[in-house]
Length: 477
Image 1 (cartoon, rainbow, N blue to C red):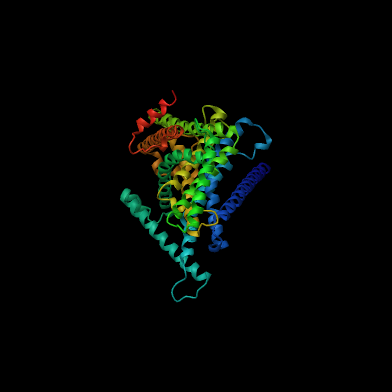
Image 2 (spheres, one colour):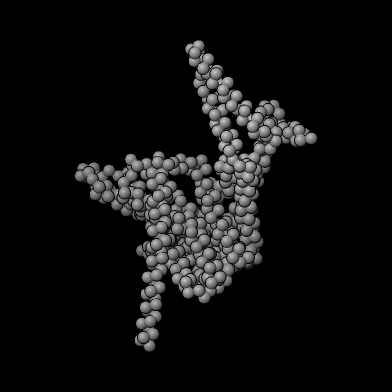
């Protein structure tokens, strides 16, 4: 018996060491990646090493939160494919559960302590009358962080007292088991609502951004003729500018310069299209648009199917679990292919939410610029990305993108058990995404038809859109 107990304890010890090493190696890789990203965007004059590592740590936690569901889903499929493989024994439910718990702990640590500390330290100068230096700024930052923590806990206690009066009185000193879960639940709810607003808008913006990066095919257009006309127009403007300069006529010089810049940009775009291969001009853009359309349509269909599941199946509700039970059954009815589609959809929704976040009018100022992003903007970006990424597992499970239930403290959010909230959330997402998609596709189609038939040169204020389309379509015959 003693030998067996020792063997079991040794096995548990080795498993814990192995899981720790794997988590540390994963975090080191993400930390290095995050460091390169922040180094690319930061303004060198405003940064010191102590501030940068806090932002790097937060960004690496955000990237790890994005990868939680993909890693969990793919690990389950790998164990299903190789159930008895000796080389896959390290991939188990204990490792995945520990990774979820670490991400939950570090994400809340970054949101509640590290990022506020970095911001207050940036704005602090030390108390009046104290000796200036790093320690004076640290003392002021610590006091400000303590006051902010008391303020936030007071707000949480008042909110809990309004909702659950008796429970709040009994748990006045129960900080870890009562108030912090309420605070985490509120942060998660805010992140999920932010994803609800940003993701549909980002899905529509993905089409325009992808279109700007690719060479668009033009119907009924002679590229050589358009290129020659642009070159002649540019030469004519240069001759006009030269004649005005020689005659000391400077009234129209500024307007001519603006026209030259516009024509030059048009010529550069035409040269890029001319250098592109026929496959890039005629196939790359349609394939990319069809791929985006397919991913968006599949996402909406999955959400609509989940709405029907919510009406007839109680197991469709998001909930938490302690043991993931990996390697027993696939989390998709279509097997490994369906699991791969789930991973792609989850990552696609995350990218779309980030695009929608930075494209909205409220957060456009946070958009980072290479070698020209201040420390305050870096902190704001790290906090925003962490809020979005830490809410992604809850977001994906609430919409039914995957049936992988939430692990650890991610499943302890109070609002997850409300059928009305989950059902309304799914309906809003499906409606907003469908509306944005229909609006984007229809207007893009009308714009391309008008441009293809040369009708964009006509005065639109005097000719209705229907007449423009009718005239354009009549040219086909």
